[in-house]
Length: 230
Length: 278
Image (tube, rainbow over all chains, first blue to last red; front, side, top):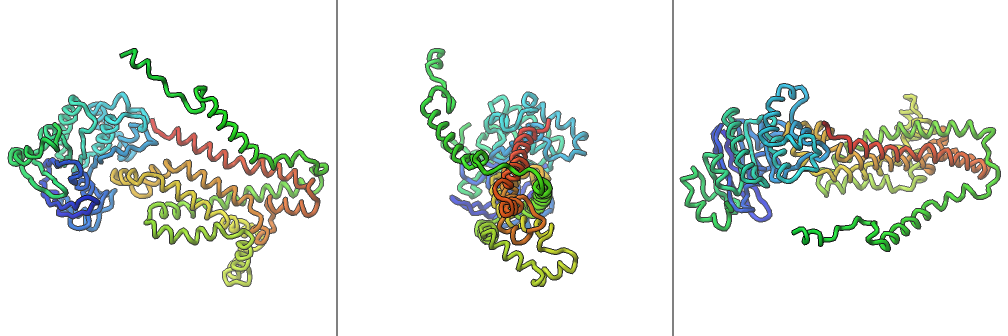
């Protein structure tokens, strides 16, 4: 179970969020730009410490006290790719794997490479890949260690429609196989709806609606035209 | 569509033939600047008497080169070992705290070398309690190899820390956080992300410290007249035998000491390019 109740002051808003997500569950976090989606995910990841509140995962306190980043059992795809520019794509994807663990994980890495279409750029310097490719490299890197909790911030950014479907299919397969718990933030509601059971709507840092997709469809429809390009 | 795309003129590279006047002006300015920097070297070709390669000069010169390169190398190991963790901390702490810690570092770096030498010889001399204890433990900090190394450490550590801090601070913090979230301990984050990305800047910092320490005369003259390094030996030769005995040592000084920072920089650049694993 992921449980959190946090507050975080940002320059333009104050994030106040409370949620409980059972293990193996999936939750979409949506809202207009600047609503606090990335802040929420960054707080859970540990990149941004909350000002107040608690975050627990499987009974383990992530905050407070802040659990050291290296000991957090999660994978985080940040809003910006943050690829290591001095390494190539392979070096980035395998970065979190110990050298001893790499042979055992080779079949998994091979699967990531194939399903996220990274073969053509596998040996390319990370600094030279395109925006869409960098996104898929960062996604593969976050998944490589098979962490039980996944935080994906805009996983479909810079991807064409066919690739979005390929990523959704792959993530759903892997989620079933590994029992991942998934939080995904994005603007693309149809894509999120295929991948998650629950949805949470953030507006100016506050949760204004939460529940099943059908349950909060009126809330989403009300703000969709200006805020959510499909 | 073809016509439209072919009508767009390609962007000329800076310094290419498209802007000959600007390129010529830039290169002319650089040439003038370079000539200004190299002008003192004309001294090698001006009459200063026959160069004294014989007698006492070769022996003392060889000893001075050995002292300078060996002991400065040792001092640089200490500077890198002590200065890198300090620079890494300063690169990530809050600005107010950084300014506080940087004040004594700047004072050490900006203190006139002769004043530093005098203070050093008083603070570590036999009349001071620490110097007295060290002497009893067989570590004289006056006119000795340890005094030479420690003086060079003092004169160069400030320069190293300031330059290394800038190099380490330029590494995006987000990359370190990402690496840590991929299960890497702080030491491994430094080894696998921070250090490779700051390597060029750290090499430049160490080069700066090396040049600063190797050419140091004022402080070393007071604390470690013996064993004489190259600057002190140049000073002795100038006093004892005049300009004709100094010039050979100057040539050796330039040929042995100064290429090292340049090689260090080249090595760091090459490793930077080759660092991506297959």
